[in-house]
Length: 417
Image (tube, rainbow, N blue to C red):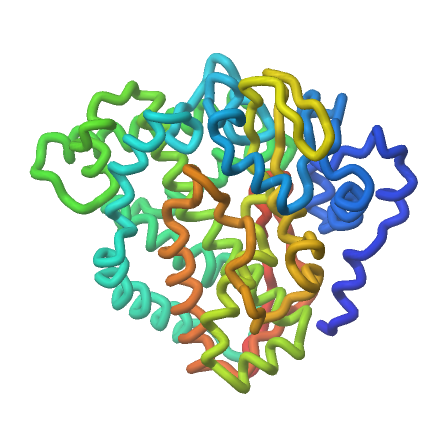
């Protein structure tokens, strides 16, 4: 691929021909087709806090600029994540299948539950995990074919993140593929290839609940250990959770540990192929991996949005938001806001401030596993650079049909040693 590839993202006639009042960036097909960029560009320039009246997701406010997103994300007293008000995604939680989880809770319950699982990503535990992650990464890379086309998503990204999830949960190793499957089902669009209805999603996730309930019963009757299930089973704030709250927190931890890292592992390789001068820069100076990693996370933005619900009337960007209104923070757009991030539409691996991005969120809901995600990416690229002169993306990637998980189904590559 060449630098010219990125011009495909630049102005699309349709995004500018639609009347502004009818512009809705939440259509999953726009993400599937990588056609979203001119929609967000127009909204940032013409209507940064934009009211969408209709569409498939009901009325909502689309917040598209970096500083406005920060204003929402850091004001949890006014903008609620509570699952009872609709939760954290643009699609409201179905009233008869609500999954409370700590990311979809307000204070003080949020902090109490988050504190239970946060030791899994404490510095001493990350240090203990580093050797295992490096060993597994090396083994996966050493098993890749040279000079043959294969799907990077399946062979590398999904494989490594599934193994990490199984370790964090101390999940039965032979069944670890279930974790990735449940994660995909939890976030899948019902018009996509994985599920065809909300009822099907409910049925599959109840199978997940049954499996994890068995593991809970084993752990709660054993001495406390360092895995996530044991932490939840023995934690003061979580040991008496209702079954659906337990399932909600499990889904949160699975998706948080899977989709984000997995899609950054794929998105980073794609970006380096789209910007070959940056790939050459990295190959000439391996120390740039440390700034490459946060730039990948900004560029990919693996979770495209988070949603809040206004608890009171409030002004944002000159617009009057009413109590009860749905407010969607488009992280994927804020990360391309050139008023805050210099040359935001360029992938630059040696930025002066590479961690200036929105991908992990801010405030009380900032991603609890951000350092683990960065460490996995850091190790992956260190090990790639030790082995391979070039990994070439072959053809267009297959993207996920979703306005929430910004990810890949396929990324065909060939290693040229």
